[in-house]
Image 1 (cartoon, rainbow, N blue to C red):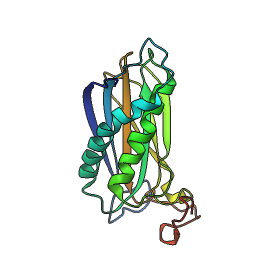
Image 2 (cartoon, one colour):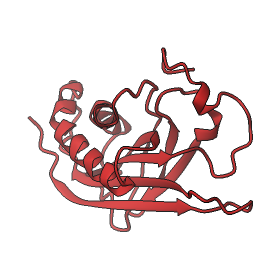
Image 3 (cartoon, helix red, strand yellow):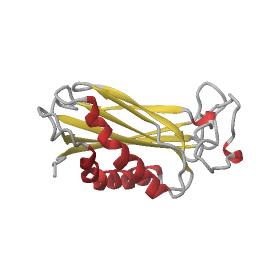
Length: 193
């Protein structure tokens, strides 16, 4: 049972009132939470990484709960995404440990979320930043929700650390006008439309 020792968490919140167009009555909120943990697989090649995802499930739930709180509750959350950043002594596959704990934690707390949780992964040193892609929680083809939020930690990830991130949002981009499937027209049967 590998140990993912937590060093720190950070929360980022953005309230977007306009993006060059008219000021909106209801700002759009994007928020993210990141956690820096010790990477127990540094310096070894482990064939069975998949079983370690279970060890990260409690972290995924705690991070999700804190992010929902930062968003002001689950009402209105209709976008999500996740990301992983591994320090340079690790390997990119270590970031994939976050797929189940991060994605399914948000689905468990947000209810009937049907769409795949957009994800990005990379290797980087201290101070590296990563874009967390965002998409609609019930339909991947809702263009208004194609977005992202950039996060980073000034003192991480260290060479032997992993940075795991989750993000959520209310509504589409503040002045979205690219057409496509609209939120109110989602059928929600397959996570696509």
